[in-house]
Image 1 (cartoon, rainbow, N blue to C red):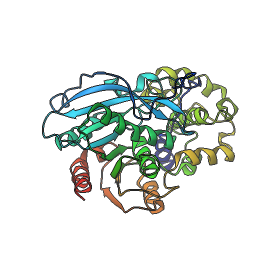
Image 2: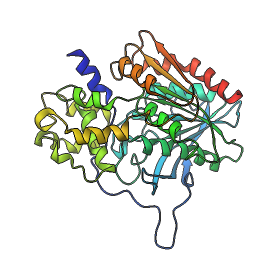
Image 3: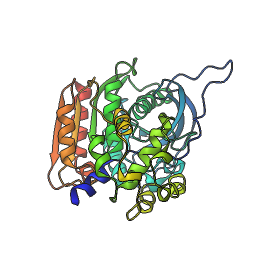
Length: 366
């Protein structure tokens, strides 16, 4: 059924099969670095279309997990070569996978074309771009895929990292994100004020953000989107060790675990496609659906800054009906919602660059 296929693909939630504990930042007598502290930095050659606009550094920086403990994240900081305005905009990327090789800062194969277009638009406005990978992508421990407060913290701390590399950058920042990153962007907005402290969030853009986990959890089994749900379940395990994927996944699904550790998004989707049966009894127990929704769904706390939500009406990854519901749920700061007729999941990024940049420019001017 088409709606099931559409909704199945929507759960760009995911989680990593590597269940080793994240590497702790602190050691005996050596406290954790402050969030945003840059632990390593090296030049990063950019792909065509970006190298003419910016110089980049690949970094590892300190952030915190959902319980406030120190952990690592990697990412990039791109500094415009012309018209630099000393403001930072975070680019929060869409789903790439959950294996270490799926970190866009180190792998151009998952530095998606739409992401390059979006970043180019931001650089052309003179903004420095921080582009986090999120914890566990290219750094020790599992990637808590679609765990919103993990993404949100690493997004905010990437701004701190950029400012630690460039003293000229102001406290003002904004966030622009797509799909998984659009969902993480809303969590960063909700966290702002309590977590960003010395920073000043001016606004966030969420393009086709993931939401409505309860709907997706019911719709996904036995559809082409099963790989997303497999990642989501291992991701839940990354933050809830009491949840054991083997308790709900079939043996056939468990046997595919190697692709989660070695492959990225397209390989995962192919490996878990039907006729593979994903879940025992074709259903995730209600207790774990509720826990997944608690970690994944935005709009559970008020927004701290204005938000702009963009959605293509022909999106078969994040259906417009789910984003309609999300926008109604968002509370707090003012929300703008633009629907793009006839645009799909990735086209919505490309075709909204001008309106997104204009909106962000206005936020910095207010």
